[in-house]
Image 1 (tube, helix red, strand yellow):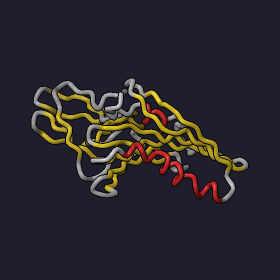
Image 2: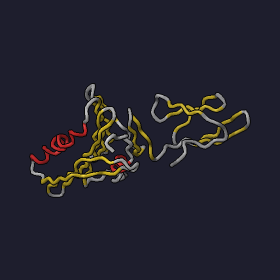
Image 3: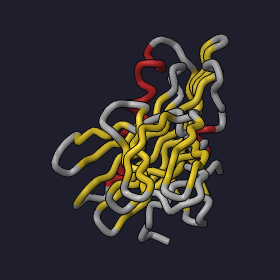
Length: 205
C-alpha cells in the first residue's frame, strides 16, 4: 500500500474539516497540503519535498469489529435502534457490503429473515430465486454461516451472501450484494474483499 507521506523529518498529520485539505506539521510549523500535491517546504535544516497520497485500501473499525475497503468508498454508519448499528459500503450500481451489529441479542439467527426481506420484492415481480446454506471462511480463519442467494430475471441477476456469527456482545450479520451491472472504475470483487477482510471476533468458533 502507498505511504501517506515521504519526508525527511518526523511528521504529524492532522485532517482538517474541509474535505481534501490537510495540515502537515513539521517542527511545529503548519503547512497546507492537498492529496496528490507535491510541495517544497522550507525548514530549519533546508528545503524538503513532501507529498500526501491516499491509500488504495483503507481500514475501518467500529466496536469490536474491523474490515478493509477501497478508499474510494466511505462507510456510512446508522444507529437503527439502541440494540442495532449498521455499517454500509455502496457502489453506484447497487453493489454493497453491509454489516449489522446487534447488542444483547444474537442477531445472526435473523439471517433467514434478512434473506426474505432483501429478495421479496424481486420475487414478487417474477425473479427466480435459488438459495443454499453456506459457510464463508474469512481471511483471518473465522467462519461466518448463512445463506448464498441468487435471483434472476432475464438479463438481470443478483447474488447475495448473507452470513453471521455470535459475538461476545450479541451477534453480527454481514451481507454482500452484487449484480451484473458495472460502475465506471469499479472493482467488482471489492465488496467480497471487504467481507473476507472482516475481523468480527466470533465466539462460535
